[in-house]
Image (cartoon, rainbow, N blue to C red; front, side):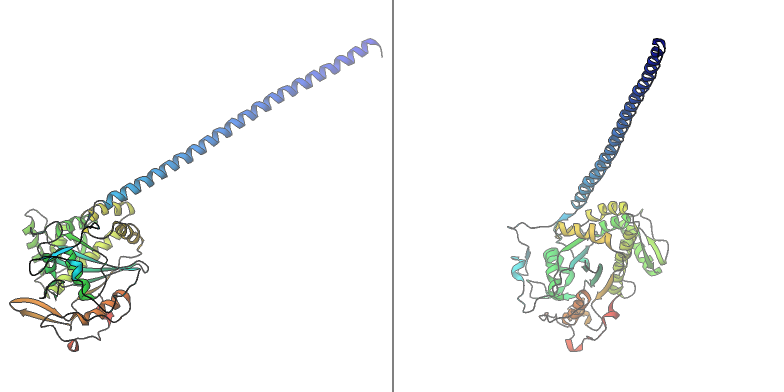
Length: 409
């Protein structure tokens, strides 16, 4: 090959190599740039993901903190009547002496039924029209006396209403009195001790509400529905006018008559229509049942808002942790708002009439206790006899074979 051809061949190869290597460098640069771009995008994506997660986590933590704070806020609306280790519950006995309530507890042979999931609470309604109540509940008599039994395993609520004119012996008193007078003599602590004594059950705490606050609670759930008769409407409207000249009167009657708070409280006060105190207790339970149903229909947010009004109206000696358990865990978990109800005294276990110039109900509590045991615990057991007030029927005269199912409303 002559020199000219050799030079041409070398030049050709050089040009090809230059073109090849130049192209490779461009490809490498572009590939490197693309990698950097992808890496940058991935880094941006990660930042966005982590940022979103962090934001959501922040919201969740914020809501959790707010939820804890708001729950604590609601629980602090309650007025707690707790005693320090150095304080004890005292009452004024019939001789005018201050005595320790715990020292008056009677000695018993048999223990009360113990069932851990079942807790019994005493619900007390006091009349806002009275000005004689002190902050500890002492003063005039209680209008509503209800034992509420809660079974946290079965998810049930049972109510036992005690007629306020029922005669009973109070701890520290040798003579019997109407059971609602215990609030006058020793406040809710004495009433609780008396109920424990006559029913032979354990009461895990009490809570009382003034009727004026009850109206606020009913309004908080949007009112209640009752079966209103024309006679009840007439008397209830009279009560409404006693409280306020401008409050709306009840207009309707019949099933599912809607009532606001003031109207519902007036309806629950109606006494001298029908069968006196028995039907009055039924009206009170009717309002409580409807109140529970209306509460269960509320959304979770509205339930919390409702709790602000409910808890703020309560005075109690129930532990704060138990209030939290039942108000925020148990109630929202209920599948339905049905409540079983028994009214005391039971027909056939009581004499009613005017004794010593005072109308009262003289109950044989020993005929009542087995029904209470079966209703709350599903079983009966032996118990120490309860001291019976004068003029009460003898146990042999009482109806003790009535099926429990016939007593439940």
